Length: 270
Image (cartoon, rainbow, N blue to C red; front, side, top):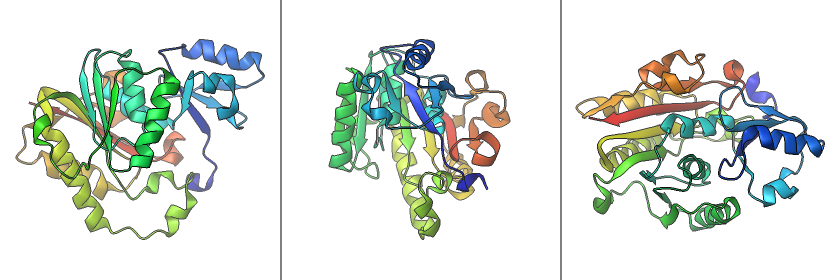
């Protein structure tokens, strides 16, 4: 069972400071073996996992620890420079920070979550990585912020979920009882609110770290009824293994892709 194997140590290269090939070389000089992720353009896998946050490269902000699946959410968002992005459920911050790096410190990202302690962690990461285009704010994504309706070029909605895709990182999830009805209603409400922040032709990435269809494609299909949104083809920016990318979503499975179980959909406002 793929879920019972240990998850690899995956890192995201901070392209504001260094390119992926350069970091591989830098690691090599220190005897650290790394190789490129198969699917994530900014990802590396560390062959012999160790306390990598003790290295100078980490302290100097050359990379962050982030799962390959999670990196793909940013790759699929594919934001243009000078855009305004709202990340509605930002903690622990990987998707915000990836988007900031992808925009080369241009534009603005409003990074929101309900947990102050987690927001402080994002602020620490912003400093470490040399990011200048992110504002962190405490806000509950279940409530609509009228002041932001129609303002964003892009929205990231990485919603709370049952976590079934990350059992190999957090085995205790197997024993948690999840109230699916409750969680799917929260997910739907967050998606509905998040979608209202988009400008016309704006794009939203909805993601979860679960393989449960009720929290994934079923939420999207429910949302698309009577809404002026479509699923957007992103097959040009992702590995051809993902046949459904042309239909605007992908389902990632540990046993098929060697990554954390994840769901990512890209919606476009008409």
